[in-house]
Amino acid sequence: MFFYQMQKKFSGILINSKVFKDNDLLIKFLSDTDEVFSGIVYGGLSKNKKNIMQLGFFLNLDVTYIGNRPPSIKAELSKPYLSSIINDKYKLSCLLSVVSLINASVIEGQKINQIYKISKDFLEILINKKKWLNFFCIYLFDLLKYIGYELDYVNNNRLKYFDTDTLEFKENFSNYTIDFPHHLFVNNSNVTFDYNSLNNFFKIFEIIFIKNHLSNLNHKLPNQYILFKKNIISFLEKNEQDI
Image (cartoon, rainbow, N blue to C red; front, side, top):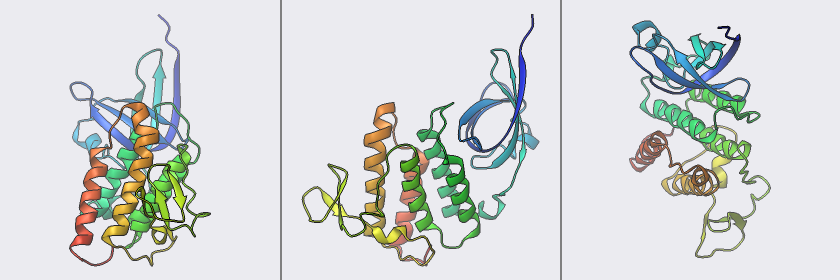
């Protein structure tokens, strides 16, 4: 019997993996074509392959399609490398949060223009900058924008409040409004964080993400995102140095 065979090459970010059977891994990655694909890494649990099959790692991937079989994937590490953040619990938690949100945001085979670029750009900031949390805030609202739920905080920067019921900016306070943390969205590292502002940021992001996206898919907020939020809020409550 003849099987059609095709091979493609991608660069990508590993966003999910699980044991397929025996010594193999089923992985999912966000590609540089702005799509999410999955396939099997045969022998993926062997020591050499397991070391690079880590969530958030950048990979060069050779994907082989044969008939109706699941694609077979061979991978090697690619820049940017993440070794500098592996022992930083806040950066590592943020990395896992980002890949879990990508995994929850993009359906396999769906193309979302620019999602790979904005994700790679933020992760390079996470790797290279000492102060990076405000860039995370910008990234999450960019993520909302590219999956179809833009919140135009730039053109509404004179409106102090955000209505959690109508999802609109408001000039006046009401029972449904909270202070919108405009100052967290400055595109530089000189941003001061406090518990209330960051808590409001997370609340607004979650309301929009759950109401418009996760509820349609019958999904919940990813555990890694929830853990990161807990870690970073706890960090601020302890009044430690800036992050």
